[in-house]
Length: 77
Image (cartoon, rainbow, N blue to C red):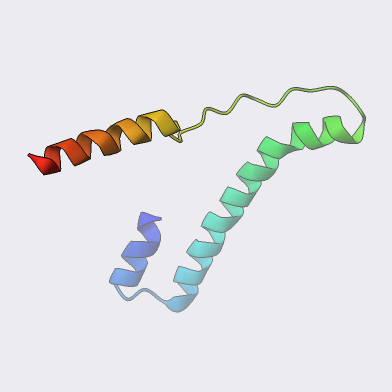
């Protein structure tokens, strides 16, 4: 992505900027296809498979409430 920014900042040719953006998008799409390929193949042929566990980055409600309470107590002082 830095290459695209450099091309834009240095007034690179619009063709070069477009080609670089396409290259980045194709690479990201290919990466996602490679990740999904085994799951789709298993689903197509009826084989059992397990999805990898995804860790939630969302805080629990209790943690959010505790943070809000702490913030309110500090603002009252």
